Structures are given as structure tokens and as C-alpha cells.
Length: 179
Image 1: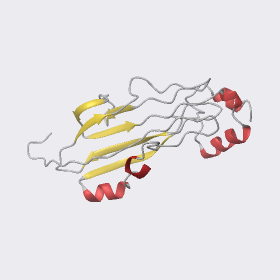
Image 2: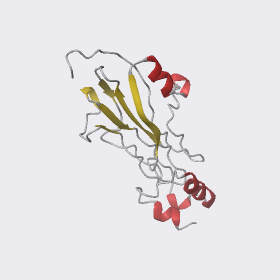
Image 3: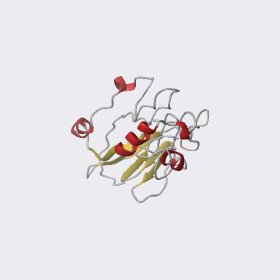
């Protein structure tokens, strides 16, 4: 980092997906049940207005929720950097970096957390680190129950909304056989 770079501090709460429940899919990118920040995060525009940070990307992480009769909620991607002339470091406090949340009663695991610099070099899930731009992928929730028991109308809805695990989860075969 530059010796004349200015420092700033911002605290954000970013959530992954919650686990599926016996009768309901998990919630997407939600701080449930803790209610951190009233279960909503500050809009990126407000964060960028209040401090010299640029949020290049914040979106749902497709394919991150574990497959199941009810699927895990989707995690999210977030790509963050500092404006020109400012120093950027991150005090990482991420969970599910080494071990994704496991599925329940035949459900599949959600995707694990990843964190990397914009040059794709991996960063640690804990501790202070530096980077020009940081790409974070927050975890998906676990699936519940056998994916082959997912109701056909839910599979079709997932495909229409592009929230299913079509590309990465092995359960896609079980899901697509029902369509």
C-alpha cells in the first residue's frame, strides 16, 4: 500500500443462505435468525456514499444452496475495493471457509465461503489482510431431504428463477428427471 494512502473504516454484515427447513426452502442471503441489521443490509449506494469504498458486485450466488426436498438458501457474491488514494484492508471473520454446512436427512451441503483478491490469489477466512479488490463468496445453506422428492413445481420454479443447483450440484440429475 502507498505510504500516503488515507485510511478509513467501514463495518458491513454480509450473510450467506440459511438452511432448508422440513417444509420450506432456506432464505437467500439472510441474517436469519439473528436479525443482524434488522435482517437487511445497508444498501450499497449508502455505503459508497458514506465512505471511500466501491462495491463492484453484490448479487445472489447461484448454485450455492444445497439440493434437497427443500433447498438451502443462496449465498451471495460481493466484490469490494477502495477508491483511488485510500488504503484497503479487511479484517476477515468468515465462517464455513473450510467446511460447508452439511445437508440434513439426505439433503446436500451448501457451497462453502471463499475469499480471494482480484488476481484470484486466495485469502484467509480469518485475520487482517490487504488487497486492491476483494472477491467474497458467502456460503449457501444446506438442503433438507432427498432431492428426488422435491416437488416438480418447485423444480420448475427454480429453473425459471435460475436458483437451482443445475451446474454444480450432483443433484441436478435427480431434479431434472422429474421435469
